[in-house]
Length: 342
Image 1 (cartoon, rainbow, N blue to C red):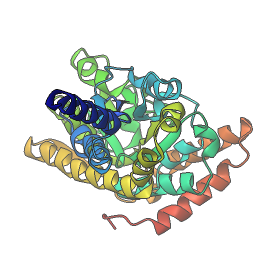
Image 2: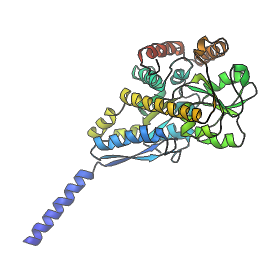
Image 3: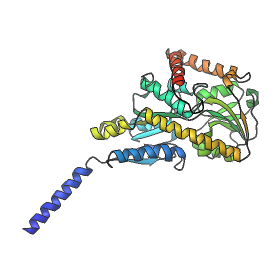
Image 4: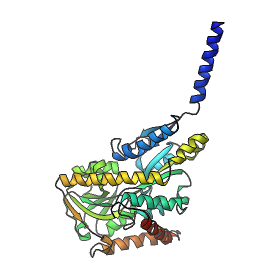
């Protein structure tokens, strides 16, 4: 009798364990930031830990940093086709795929990561960017702070100082502006910049202060020009089939950790990392040039405004007749989104 009872209890215990773990799911997240970077530790890993906690352990996120699951320019596609369950990447790494989203990267849209993340998330929430993300389920949008010019040996004070320099460009949009100012833009993923600069492949780069710290670029450059060429945009997005395969309760956890709240949290982290990256340069004794109000500056206004108009015109020529309307919506969102630097 005792033997039968023990077997029954054991069977019940095993059944209970099966019920409690039946819906446990591991989500693979691919991104290109180093594992020790503030972006990985303070944004993406915090998001993963929050999802695990709120799901009672049913959802676990396995992190693949530094392009280990998919190369930087393939991360979005990896999330779309299921190689990754979640991908966090820069839209600009997939040239021409997110043209309306990249309007937020244009000079003058925002003065901080918090502000530009709010602008990008607002445009998406308002349905202005839906067509660009139909193949995945976006979780939240975020951005860097303004990206300036950083060089090894050249003190860039005016656009003329860029003539002949090989500058790593973050996106084709920023690259065209650099080219119009006389520089030779060179495209490469962020993880490749350090070794390329060591080998003399490029003379400098356009990058936010955060990136100079995250990718150790402050070790190689000596001159910095704070002129906002862009705010690089990012998306954390999920494979649709993976999301659809979750239980309603698990989907609710994902939904509760999507949207503007996480865009704001990510923006705050990037703003803090910008401060830290700049402080590194200050402590190293680097030369830092601050170009105040560049869109009203006598040297920088014309090339920056020309770059903005050229990009919007190109989009319209591609059949995106709403380009100027989205730009105006971005400006309106910028006015309503808070910026800690204002």
